[in-house]
Length: 321
Image 1: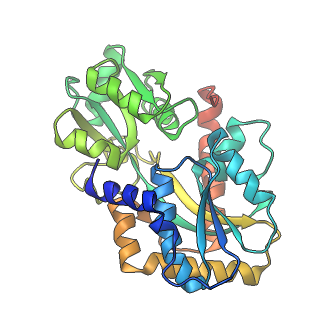
Image 2: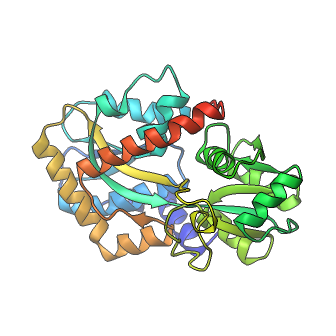
Image 3: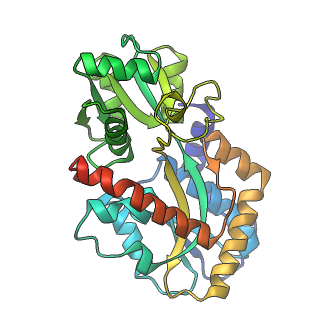
């Protein structure tokens, strides 16, 4: 675990990341809903944002975790909340775009039931292989996959790490077998042990294993290189133009929230992200911060992600756990 994540976990344990510098005494707190369990990357980033949001809003900002169903439980809670700007979803690609195709019975519609505040940015995955795999580039890996039986592990059916592999197979014309696990940790353990050949995982999780030589980075899954791994080419650079399997993050509120309240939240969000401490933390987590933080920018991102993954999910017969 790197120093930044150890520090963040310590702050979570003491509750400091959820406490703004200047809270309004007696004021109703704003809830920042994280639809995933505490301690993960999404939770840590949300808590850093909560710290920065408090001062421009003049209110206490509390992080509340409501995990389950790939983020759907927390997202539905926000969709059904009062449209008063006091309950905000810190969403990701799953609940804001992809889950509608993975969970047919999903009780909310992200387009109909949310008013987008703004995107935060993207975090890339890394395509990493076991150190004994001879391939050192995407073309070499594709050639090897056409000659030998390879497998890739994911953190579960329907997870971003699964979809990244499904997209790779589709664009590369390969049939690399998918092996789902109950979380990233077990998948990485089997990668390092040589039971599977490759994984797609976030840059910070992969970094210590790459640095120690226990695994080898083949490519970054965003269109741009990662500042955390600046010397590692993207998958798109290596013969699969347009390949992008990153996770995006954004803030949204209930659809009926009045525009003045949305504008207030958007301004506070932009102010928080512009704080040097917040920006440094986001970059240390591998975040590629969005160039435009507006509601329309998030709406466009949600629509493009939905369209991009719909065909992949259908053709690969992806089903969520």
